[in-house]
Image 1 (cartoon, helix red, strand yellow):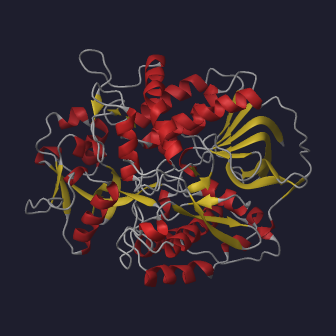
Image 2: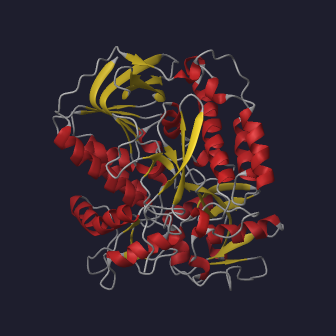
Image 3: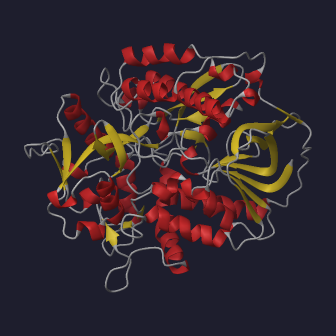
Length: 530
């Protein structure tokens, strides 16, 4: 048993930013399911969005964010995060050699889909996530107050019986033993759930664990129907092999078929740089007809120098960059929903916080604007650190031995679990880019037969824990997608293909697990961009 001032579950950009910004007298422990460098953030090719250009202004960035999010966003959150972005990036830029600069020594600003200005800061061309993570890891190693526990699979939150407060988590180590970790502040920073789908850009470890744990502990979960599918993953022989960053289209690449037909002509005013849900749906339509879609990169000079990571992925998969065409398909990329939090990261359970992709503040609305994700992680990590630094010494009466586990495992029996691949394939087919009532009902029946919420997690292997969490998240997404009878952002219903502002604008579906699932709608106050 270990006690900590701050216990962080996850090791991506939001987690590490929080850890390094906490003062040296705060005792910090980071639990990560695998290794520090296998976090999803490490794979992020795209950059970080901030209104730094001469002709740019946060107000423009705000409008773009609201437009991409189909006005489902929390306007106050959008305003605060986007307005803070330029200063945040400038401060980070002076701390380390992280970002690419032009010949004048100024930050190089790129363009990405649905942005009205060049405002994307990159590091190492297309290795921004890796660059920022390496910087944060280097700072982390100099901090004696921070302990990192690798290969610790956190799986169950511990709640104080008297106060209904989160006081820690149980984790399984590589040898299968169970260890309890306690903390005054417990932070979930485990990322999204991209691995629920057959095709995804996400790291192997990203299967929704943190969101599932919070749900099973009774925390409010929100907006789970909004899943972003990135339009362009490298696609070979029916498999996706890695992300082809939006920045490639920002530099002039266009989407074409075998015969050179430009598939985005007449579909959206921004054509190939349209919002991700629009471009993903268009590519998906062609693939369903048996037609391969390519990124035509022939107009981009010095492609391999500008995009070294993408060039390497292509070469490893026998795609010749010199031929000027990269075969692509859409795949699961980002979850706009998650654990409902305020801007500090506080959840509906005292002592439990969530930051990064696992959280949902309302910043992204129904669809995330490109390169707002690393920005959100950096902002939230810094924001929560300031709050903890100011409040962590406040007295708390938390008795470590006075805890209970949530009632979901009472009377649990052994339940047969499906194959991981089967979960992924059914989610892709029935709750993927295009959804409808028939498929959603089919998926609900299939998921419910496994009674995942009744399984005693202590008895599960880490492999089975992953399946339980995947089924739990699959149920949340499917149920929310069934309930939202419209199409908005990352949620597309072929049987309700239009946005329904009268019934659904700024309405969120909130789910929690408290002696059965309770669902409610809550208005999110969002001002439309004028």
